[in-house]
Image 1: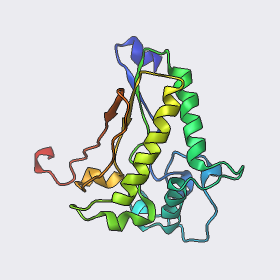
Image 2: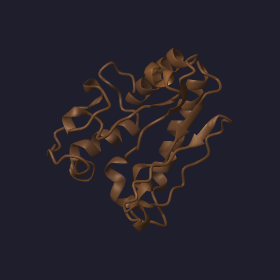
Image 3: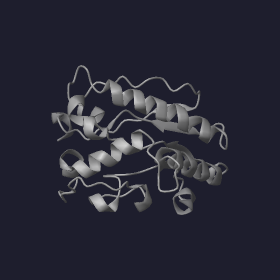
Length: 187
């Protein structure tokens, strides 16, 4: 990051994940944050595991309900603590312009119900709103003004409606990812 800054670039610290953990052919969460399950874990690669891997869908569902980690503390709570640690570490670093709270949050088992382009995924959007409402004050406790970016569930990038609620903080920004999956202009 300092090399980028030396060349006039600034960075967005993204709590990045794709397919949650290595056990699902992805990355992001540590192994202890993956609850045990007897559900099948087919190795179908990216992005197929999101939609066709029951064990992965179970893990996301566990995260969004803040299921306890082996130490009894919720996985979502651990995530918030890790974020606070990172924000405190980087709070005075001028090479950082903001934090992205969660990269492309996947809804888990409920994803198929989210495919209606008009209705979207209101249950997951409510969970995400609560998650962001929890994360932002934790970041604010250590870094009161840096931008915090947040986004709807992953299916929003495919044009699915969102009912993501407001995150009441003057230093937040809406983040979206556009992969041009259905747009001719991107070809």
